[in-house]
Length: 322
Image 1 (cartoon, rainbow, N blue to C red):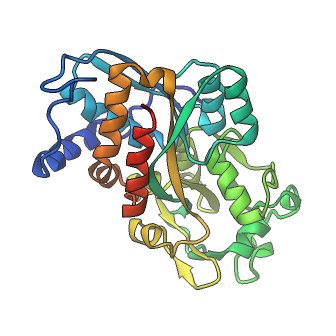
Image 2: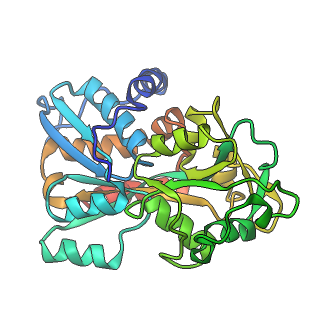
């Protein structure tokens, strides 16, 4: 299980974001908690863990927030959505990144530990199926073919690409994917195979999406999946495989995810904020900043912006923190 400070998108995103926010008049001062006028300087550390998919977004938001609040350190780590919730419900983090909604058993863990929280939607994503850039036969896969590849029954039995589609070569299949603590693993498995946990086990798992990138980029017969931002950042070594959900082959892009045409692998992304942590001015200010500047942050970090209804909901969720 991966747990490292995440810096992948922070520096380039922060530069782009700063320019974008300056152009659209982004806020330069924080409101004084419980008062008005210019805020006293915020300080402290904000601890974030969880989804590796959401990590670049939170990391970029943290870097930009720090530009305006130099005494606040936003630490973003990646343990997978499930691993992040374990830490969050144990009171070890302030915010948990999640690429799926919290599960019933995770809610129970938080309740038992007295951790109250608020779910906030922060972006959308196109969960991308990817292949080596030089692969010529993997152009589009139907959801039925993806199920043939990834269902539990494929373990040790579906080993050649010709078994997936008769027009494919008799070449060995090599699969890379998120580990079982990942919300991306949960979402993909349910969307493609129909139920949680119904996944083949003979693939190379990792909670670090960069490891999946390296695996796919190193084998012309490999296939993997992860969030759209990792695809766009590594377009020189990997390529998108279009997905046919029943209405033709559709490529994962910001536009297809926003319109809903990239189905069934378009999805919302979340942060979960501990209400106790939100009582700290720096945390509350950061979360407000995150949502207020959502459009610029998601575009610069190569995620899919919230639609108007989602943005209204996110603003209401921030207010629910108190």
